[in-house]
Structure formats: C-alpha cells, structure tokens
Length: 309
Image 1 (tube, rainbow, N blue to C red):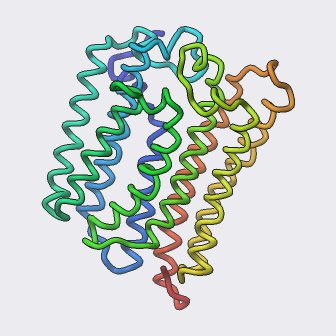
Image 2 (cartoon, rainbow, N blue to C red):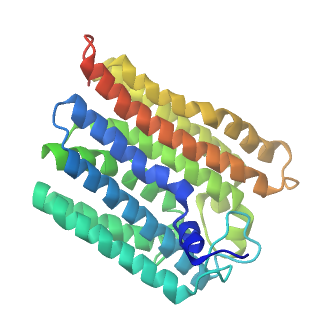
Image 3 (cartoon, one colour):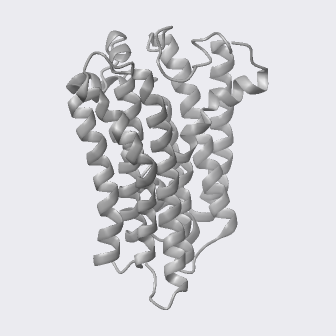
C-alpha cells in the first residue's frame, strides 16, 4: 500500500472514530449554552483534549495489538499502519506519547480553569485509553472494552465538558451522556462483531468472542434502545425541551446498518464479515448526529418560548 507519510499518520488516527470523541463535547457544550454558562475557550479545549485522547488511544491500539498479535494479515477492518508495515512500531509509539503530551497540555489549562476534578478525570481517561489494549490487563482483551467506551465516551465526557464551563455538575448532561455512551458502545459492538473470528484466534476475548453473534446483535440494538430512551426521559421527566429529541436523528443511518448486521444471523458462517465495515461507518455517523442533536436541541429549546433543559 503506497501512501505518503502524511497520509499514513492520518490513516493511523482513524478519523472515522473521532465522532465518538467529539459528540459528547458538542452535547455537553449545548447543555452549557442552554443554561447560560457556555465558555468558548474551555469548550474548545475540551474538544481538543477529547480528540487528542482518542487519537492517542487509536495509536496505542495500533501499537499494542500488533505486539500482542491481535492484528494479523487476516484483519477484516481498515488498515492498521503498524501491522501493514506502513509505519514502524517505534514511530507509532512516539506518536502516541506525543499526542498524550498534547492532551496533558490541554489538561493543564482545563485544570487551571476548573480545578482538581479535571486533573483526576484527565489522568484516568489517558490511562484507560492506553490500557484499552496495553498494560498487564488490557481491557479489550478481557471483555471490558464496552464498559470503558460506555463510561468514558458517555457520562464522563459530557459531564466533564459541562463542568469545565460551569464549574458545577449537570444531571441533564449526565443523562445525555448515558445515551451517548450507549450509542458509542453500539459502534464498538459492530467492530467486535466484524472481528469476532480473528479476535478469537488471537486470544482477544471481547464480548462478541465470549458470547457469539446473537448476543452481539441483541447488544447492538439494546444499546440503540438505551440511546433512544435517554432523551425521551430527559424530555418527559427532567424538563428538557422536546427539541432534544433531535438526537433521535442518529437512528437514521443506523437503520441500514441494522439490516446489514442482521445478515450475520440469517446466514451464520457464510457471511464475509467485511460487509460490516459500512455498518460501522453508518453507526459512527449516527453517533455524530446524536451528539449534535442533543446539543443543538438543548440550545434551541432554551431559546424557544417553551423552555430548555
């Protein structure tokens, strides 16, 4: 595969996954704006920090999966630059370290703005990002990747985004984060369903490997169901504006994605799992729409005569 060095590093960052990092910041900032506490620089810093941590996690996954044998020539997903020989392992490791350093610099500013809670959350987030595939007990190799994604790409991200702007916590942002965490988990489920056979052969015990295709399909639609219920609960019982139901637009790209995923059950053992790659992209777009719908819906609701969150 002939690519330039710039293209190689762009490929290594896995741009399609970055919606999972950006969506909670957009949602949390929308809730901050609706409450009249939006702060431009902390919001921008929160976005940059989230993107840096996500990119560092992607580079760590590329590096550690290669070392552990989790990535092989039989890989069904997008190219991993270390396994494909596009970038040297040492270069990818340095890239991870530099990106974590950039995240730390952003964290220093946010800690100055919002205090010690940001330091604790930032350090744990970076540690968990590396430990997703690295360290003595890699989360994704022991079926804990789903928990990590739900917590850190959901309530932690939305609540912290709100906190760095308002210096207080928001129950609404946390509920919104539950929906976002569930939606991001659905994205991970597609990834693990696609890679179930190759992960199993490499000793990577994801939930898809442990419990099989049927469990993963139920988990996917269950995650989307949780994401659907969250804004409905917020609107009905927490005083959100009905505009926050804009988040359900995230379902639109997931409808064809769900059809592709169901094929795995209808023809077990005969489906080329590469056909799940478009479903992964559709679900990633769903996450982006969902986060934007929550944030924009909250803001529109606050500006309307019917009130906001």
